[in-house]
Length: 329
Image 1: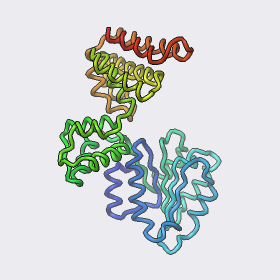
Image 2 (image 1 turned 45 degrees about the horizontal axis):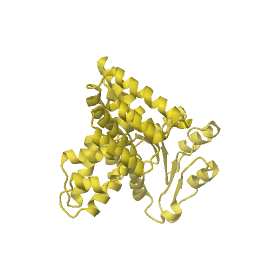
Image 3 (image 1 turned 90 degrees about the vertical axis):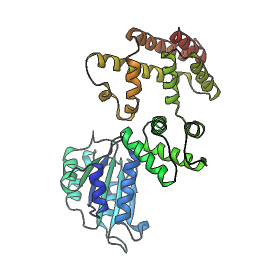
Image 4 (image 1 turned 180 degrees about the vertical axis):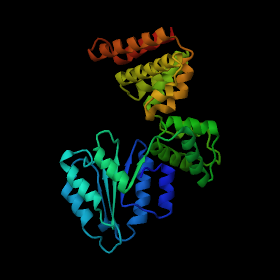
């Protein structure tokens, strides 16, 4: 059966553990958390003998099948997790997999964890859906992530305003993995009950992409002081100018896409990759204020100076300064 994440949560809470699961999607933090929950419910005794995890395509099918078919040791259950091992994609294993998954022993719990189902054999996916549970772990919405952050802080007797939670989630690119790390840092590093924007700025590690987006925002809004301040920071941190140009190009191209789609009466957020939907509101605001020709000119300039850097015609940061000056002009 196909279950949503809340439905899966209820099933596990009710100790209704299936023998077979297929988890897929980008939200690795939640995916791994549910695998851990199922393990805690299934392999209670001697997990060192009754739990095994295969983590890449070097996994051997015979080792996997032998583990599944051998009885648990001093335990009622045993569990195996296969992360991106290729058994669902490789035609050589299809018939063996159909037989094994159709006749899983009652003591075995098998979990497949995949990035995507794009290359998985449809027959195997359908079989897992018939015999077990299939759940997609999509990137969480801003509202869900904000609620998660709020619960995390509440458990530590900390508070944060909604605006600052939105800011923190954006800095972490809507990744629960990164939010977990950064929230723990904020809780440990803040004596006050209220965690403020200044605490975030001093303690949270800001990804380069977010800083470059901020620079593009500053340039499009003619905020020269902050743009040059960020450029200085990039120099000090020895960031690669070609990478910065590539991110500026990507940001500008997505803003242009938003402008064009809005003009066609379409919702541009639908066309963003799942791990970039957190940028939707920012891109929409910029798209409504910018001239399409200007955006295209910036993209051409980024491409031109990227080529000049790579061919040794110009120093990387000199090229960035030229692009910045042009965008501010």
